[in-house]
Length: 183
Image (cartoon, rainbow, N blue to C red; front, side, top):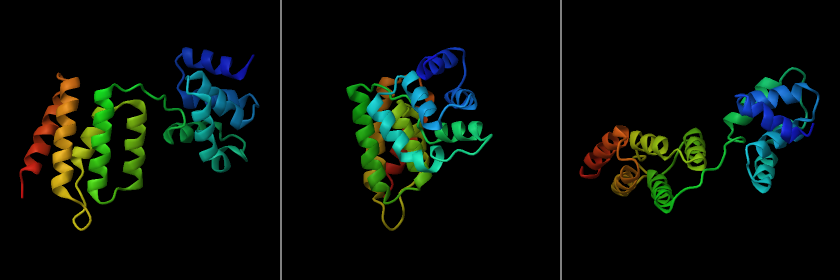
């Protein structure tokens, strides 16, 4: 059976991408081939799959240790290798652009926060990204608080228009508006 077909079948049975990777890798297949098969089974384009796997090949896939298939699958999932790209509307793309301006206005961002935001942009989880940015603050010395909060207000208004029933966005937007009006 072709690895991509096996991965697609395993995923269709409810297995997570990490579990799918671990199961197929335990059958003795090469880690890179298994990771590629899982990505393709998730309909991640081949060029994007190649880029993602090149980024982590040396650290995770080149020299596998015995009995680490589950750990490797979970790491690949946590790194976003198996994240399925969402198709964003024009409004959602505008929201992401505002988020990028806000990130710039932060004056610096922790790598873990940046990684999470990148994954949410990729998967289209803009609500989580907005809530995360609304809970953060610009850095005192290098950030631009006025630009940060006003940009988040604009992004929040656009996001609220696309998700009118999400109270979390409304509350975060109220918070951002209050911060934007502070001197």
